[in-house]
Image 1 (cartoon, rainbow, N blue to C red):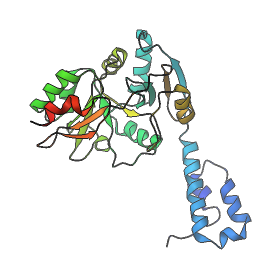
Image 2 (cartoon, rainbow, N blue to C red):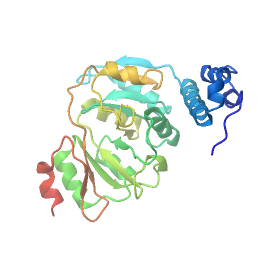
Image 3 (cartoon, rainbow, N blue to C red):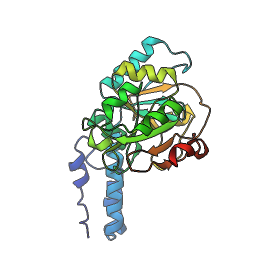
Image 4 (cartoon, rainbow, N blue to C red):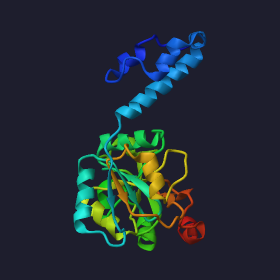
Length: 269
C-alpha cells in the first residue's frame, strides 16, 4: 500500500505555491481524512494534478482568421509560434486540432499533457506536399502513392513506417506514423512556411468528442495553448479515415470521412 502523504509534503514538492493547499488544509482539518488513508491519498494526488496544471498555464493569444482567405503575415506569425516549440489550436478541414512541431520531442510531450492523452495513443501529422512525406517516412509502399493520388488532399490519414528522425513519443506501434495532406490551402501554406510537419490531433481532452466550435475550444484550452487560431465555427464533419499501410495487408484503423465503399478496391487486392 502506498504511504499516506505527510502534512507539508505537497508544498515541498511544488515549492512555488503556498505551503498549504486548500485540499491539504482539509486533510489537516478533518480527522476523518487522517483516519482514511486511501481517501487522503486521492486528495493528495488530485491536489498535485491541480497545481501542476496551474504551473503549466501559459498566456493564450487569439488570432482570428478567415480559413478561405488568410493573410501571409498571419501564416508567418502562426509558423513563428510553432518554430519556438509553441502549441496552437487551429481549424482544419474536419475539426479543430492541436498543432506542434512534430520534430520536437518537447512540443509533442506538451500535446500529450494538454490532452491528458495516454502515451500509447500515437499522434498523426500534416504535411504540405508529397515531398515532405519522403522526409518523415522510412518506407513508402506502392499502394500509398495510388491512394494519395486518389484521396489527397483530403480527410484520409495513411500510416507508414516512420523515419528514425522523428521523436519516439510521436510514433505508433512498430515505429509508425499517420500522415495526412489537408484540403485547406492555408494549412498547406502553414506547414510549408514552418518547414516541418505539424501534429494533427483533435483539440479535445482525450476520450471526449471532437469540436468544431471555437468557443468550446477556448473553454478547454485557454491558458494551455500559446496561440488559438480562431477560424469561426466549422462545418462539422467526420474525422479522417485512418488506414495502416505498414502490414502485408492494408487495414482500416478508423472509418471516418472517407467511407469503406470508396476504399474497397484498394483494400481488397
